[in-house]
Length: 172
Image (cartoon, rainbow, N blue to C red; front, side, top):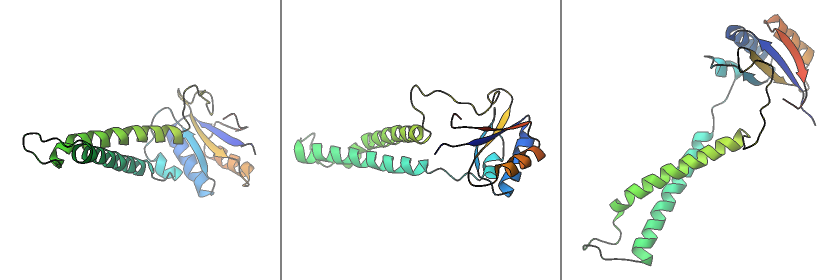
């Protein structure tokens, strides 16, 4: 089923923020907002939930720590024990730098890959702008068309200062 979007453009951030609050008050779900710079309070107005990406980082780092410790323990105690200066085979303090490095490395790489996968960013993907000028000086508010009344949404957007309101297909 193809998606249909309602795209409204605005000339300033305050008007956009007011329109987002009005649309959410009418119980429409905001698909996305495009702005040339960050707008304070926009995330709260849109109802954006906290990201689960820190959990991905935590579990990837835990995996890296476990992998580093297990590999070092296996190689120094079980597979190839060496008597180096009379130290015990299981000298865990010597494992700390490698464990730290692999925790950070694997946590960072997996986090970056998870972000790219979640954002559907991959090499060669073409950019698709919601409206002309959103990277320069325009602000755009995008609603995904669902079973709700999009005429009412367009009216609310126009009442709250939208310069233009148009419907777009799946090419968004």
